[in-house]
Length: 72
Figure 1 (cartoon, rainbow, N blue to C red):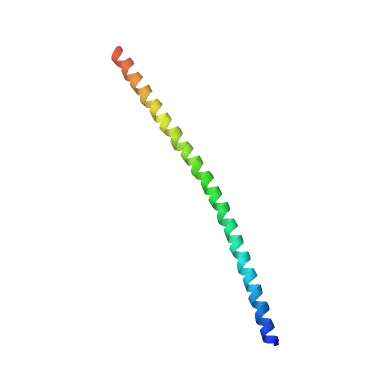
Figure 2 (tube, rainbow, N blue to C red):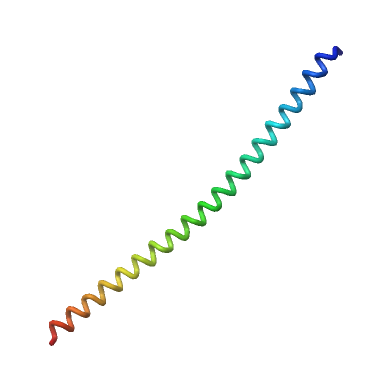
């Protein structure tokens, strides 16, 4: 085999390995970031649910206050 062909084969193999390694690293980073985003969305949804429940309780309290004022 010619020296140029050997260099080309070795360069091609290294390029493939480097590209494959880059894809794997990028995939891991994407999975990590998605996991973190899912946690943040979950916390946000919990806050929204709590706010909804608190608004419902406030409506009840406001209604009770109106009833007490009307009763006087």
